[in-house]
Image (tube, rainbow, N blue to C red; front, top):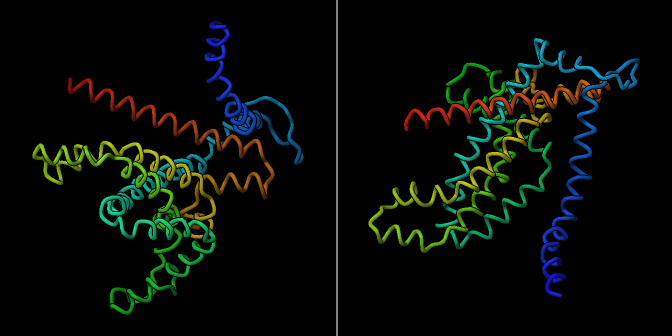
Length: 289
């Protein structure tokens, strides 16, 4: 009986993780695996032919356009993620520690903003940044510009600005949750030990909230680097990203293998850049030691 109970105890975690593992395998691993297989096939006369080769990857990396789009997409994603965290952290901090009275209202407004149409918000920014938009009107009214400035639109920075506005709620909630989970006793203990507000923030609050910061940064990076609607409507040719090229291959051109190769090429470049960054950080630590 004891052995049977022990066996059931060992099987308990497996039974609990079984449905989740099955769900992830069926709806994530299998589709990604099929997607990966497509990247090694080719298209002939609008039909996918199961001929194994690396021609799609060769076309991606040897093209004068696609590598630039990959680098631009990763750069836009990284800049948007960093700016989102920098902009959102003071808001989340104030919401967690200063505005307890209005916390529920502000959270409600943040969540409601997620229900607004994504494309409508992008078109709103188009009207603001366009040649006849609000920004140019203000600049000309203040005498800072003699005529409409076209550089406000169709640039990577215009894409970053719109992405920043669209994804701010997604960055606010993880950071706010991490700050809210910090025990007040730790902050009180730091204060009792003579730490000022700034020192308490740098040595207690910020380190304890880093899981939320990292989660928000990763979330925003993935959403921004893979976006293709915003570059299409705001970025123009100069703000085009790899997502636009992938969408073209899967839609207009119907070259799914090449589109899949673009996706996995982007992932490969990102992983290589991440590995180089981690290696550089490790080397810097060894030098300091």
